[in-house]
Image 1 (cartoon, rainbow, N blue to C red):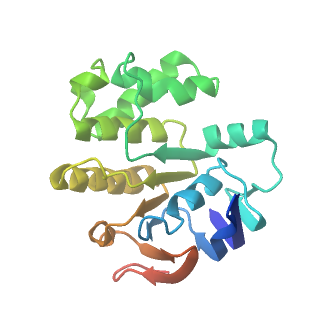
Image 2: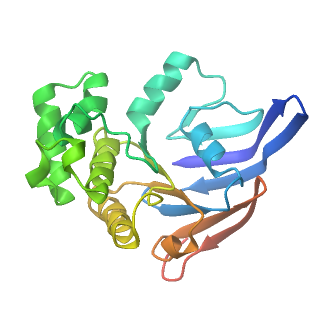
Length: 230
């Protein structure tokens, strides 16, 4: 599903240039739940942005769902993101003037799917996450945990190849953070979704299949969790 080979990303500023990612190599199989663990500044967000076609890279090879991202046009990258990638951020980024259901169907509408079919699918996903009574509620009428679940449903609407989450529990209390992780696991089991979850919180990784450890731009360890198979 995901294959990254010898990836290097360089940032340049007035002080010179420095490597944000250094010879990073790893792969993710379909249906895996993988954590990307590292302190702030380790390069986690940069790596997610590259995998999602939001940032370029200097050398190496990045393949997602059999598509090589290097050299793709801006238009092709935008289509790639819409069809193959789902994002869940630390802040939900829901549109305040749209209901939960309307927020979820937006990516499907962009892809050209019918509003009726998209609404039916969105309602099904929201029901999986216990939000069937919240379809017509606006973000301001939802709790923080409910907003993040709506954001997850939005990320799932186009059945993407990969869901990427960047510190998704950062704005949630412990109880809602644990609930959101349970919803990720539910989507993994019931919808066979593949997840890459970036976090600095090692406690969130205990229930996942693997943990990739990123330190100072380098992938220092790839740890298979007990009870999972390679």
